[in-house]
Image (tube, rainbow, N blue to C red):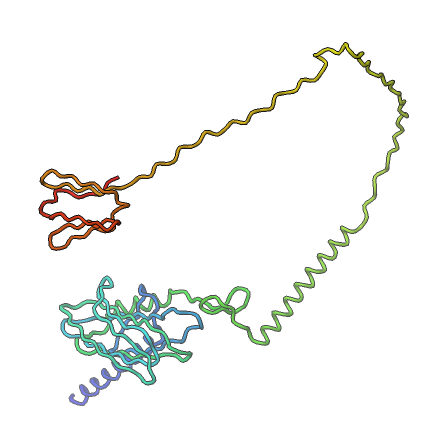
Length: 333
């Protein structure tokens, strides 16, 4: 009986280990890039890699994971290599809890962050980074403390979402490959030759069609019969020119002479009055009823020193007034 229970225990341990390894393999193979479809975490360690972007593409690669946090201290340790970016932990509703910054260097870097949780809740882990060069970047995240694997419902939902997410191809319908920013990638030699043959065939067919159309258009069309119309010869009638009678001298009437029109007088524009210049004045009223007015064009500066209002004119003269005696000072037009 003792041996049977021990064998059952070993069998259960082996099955649990195989399930964890299988789940970890699924997890690594299905790194979600959509926050609506996060990958469920069933072990306390995540391994991932981020491929380099094309030249000129400044976007960051995002991976999303979901797991369960229990009451207590949750310790998140991130080990990264050749990555620049951040690792964030969010609560329900994308409420930020912690941020770990990743810096790319010659060697791998490690950073640790501790989070205190008051209750059990689902947490979202986001890896947002990019490679610093043409080599891929890798990261490893380990959870310690208040960590619990994702529930079976989370795993089933993650698997269903993985199967329903469409796969986007990087090829256009024409067969030409493009980069993530829309740039055309040079095709292989065989593909290039095939495309050239197809293009030459298309050009030949289009040129033959255009040539046939041009020949059809260049054929002479039968001209319609020309009708000859005979018109009667016009009869030219010569007009006799009559000379006007000249009046005799001495009998010329005044009405027959052309009248000279008086030269038109141009209207003289009235002189426009000059626009009056608006001058501003400095007005100072004192408590004893005195009123001082000066043109601002004659004032050089106005200062207050030791409780005295000092007005300096452009001609060098100055005038002082005690500030306690000044009732109002203004600059008005």
